[in-house]
Length: 389
Image (cartoon, rainbow, N blue to C red):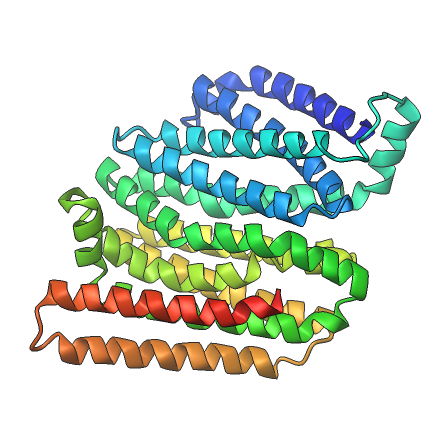
């Protein structure tokens, strides 16, 4: 209860600060509605983290994973549905809706626990909770801010240099390519955090190698398919108004695949108290990718060139994260190198095969066959990799 009280207190403080800063935020194009929605989302995130911690303490990993999946699913459905209106506010509303559903689901799960938290407010306990978890305030809070910079700021930058239509194409491409990473985070993060905290990091190397290899190999057919005919796929699935988004998605799919293998590993570094590494690496990823995107657009180049720069910086950052995480955990990196090599070779073979078959087969039929084969390959690889969880 002390932790919940701290979250409520900080929510009030942030709300007051946001209210005072409304005029200043308006100068950056952030209106009152976005400010209120952002504050509500941040408050729910804080409350949700506390509820997740209690469920993890109780060993309710299935409930945790379902809640995270609900968050990602509801957010994406609302954002995709609202995106048809062309109003960017639905991106924020979707995030808020997903977090609200997940938080309510966590609260319902705690109500069913035999060992429920005691509803009492003790100022000494609140202060002790703050002191005991000061490293999360010191490192994890800035880490969250930097992750938001990496994900959200590019939309505003693209909007400053490009038309609203291109902003929509970019946002949709980012959202769809990063949807799998939200699902893997929901499934893997609580499980591996508990296992690493219970049995130590050294015992997790084989499982992590299997998961990383499975995720990278499962991603490679889709990267090849998007590189070969991403625009056609987007037109077939979403309609002609999204023509052009497939080219952006093809470039973003490479860093998205590596992000899918890293966005749950930050909890492994939490176990050994290296939140500082999470913050440093996230800062590098955010500053380099956002800075590269902005510089290329400011130099007068096209959005495609800017996204290529952003994708390159993100890919290098995620590769650095994997290398640093393996080093900090004391794991050999031979399995990681083998997984990256195997996924790269497989993707190249699939792309070349599609290119050859495309010379004498109907393109739409070829894409359908490719998507079916990629789906079967992904399902097979992930089915085998599930044993490591």
